[in-house]
Amino acid sequence: MCGIIGVTGTGPVVPRLIDSLKRLEYRGYDSAGIAAQSEGRIERRRAKGKIRELEAVLAAEPVAGAVGVGHTRWATHGAPTTTNAHPHKAGRVCLVHNGIIENFAELKAEMEAEGRVFESQTDTEVVAHLLDHKLAAGMAPLDAFKATLDRLTGAYALAVLIEGEDELILGARRGSPLVVGWGEGEMYLGSDALAVGPFTQKISYLEEGDYVAVTRTGARMFDASGRPADRAVVQVSASSALVEKGEYRHFMEKEIHEQPDSVQHTLSEYLDLVSGKAKVQTVDFAALDRIQIVACGTAFYAAQIGRYAFEKYAGLPCDVEIASEFRYRDPALSPGTLAVAVSQS
Image (cartoon, rainbow, N blue to C red; front, side, top):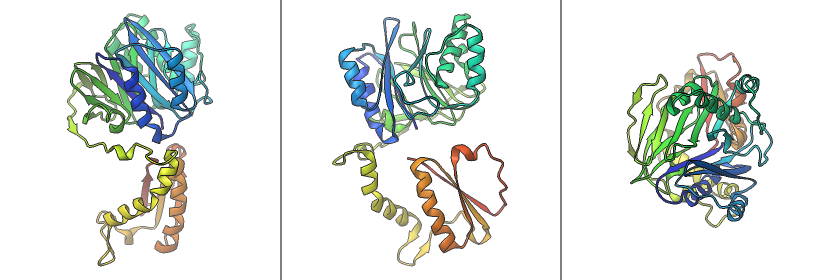
């Protein structure tokens, strides 16, 4: 899963982007990058490896600006290289993306036929070219963005800078989460509440298909059809303990050592330890004839272990599938199938 942060305000943006990206390290990544806009010009810096490599690049080649986006990438389309790292830039457009654009090959061929040259192997770069192509045709930024979104098939969370729009960040989500963070004289976009946690606890969760125009003074949100949308501003409590490594060398080590507590918390939520009875009220287990688990990454490994427990103790057949593959299948599922989706993080 990729991590996204966008900040628009009045002060230097790069330290804020780096701070947020460090809090998103728990998602796992193989490269990182940032872009910032100042006086109508966007500059980006990218690095393969950890955020410390990106910091070294920034120390040698600083970037200024009060509006910017940052990204940690887990490679899907294209190898983990600096060239494939986000942000991706085409003309006036610079953007970061979490998700998979399923029709990118078709769109890329269309853009190449228009004479556009691609530098990376990613599906993301085609979005930048498509949006810039519409801007070059004279469309206003928000209209061009909506027209671009309408061409995309697949899942995405996007945060976009446009040269000449000095305080604007455009965002959109379909299949991947994105939140708007509300500050005083600053606004934020993030892949989750933890991304904007260092700056604000006031957030709005974008709904499926929403897109948004964020400036330092506020946000205009729209639903998938282009109608203005009013998404509630909620107060969240993002515990720093969840996103800091503490005494551990890395997040994997932290998660390994936290497993006993995680199991205990789960059991206490669903089991009455006095009576020994489960408190799950929404599933009629007696009516089940099989269990289907979908998961990705390390959650897939956990699901495979869970399969043994379901089959041994519940006596039910249990299948485990990688979620990204399961969505393209047409499986034979009976009305008595219990579906269990396990989050990677």
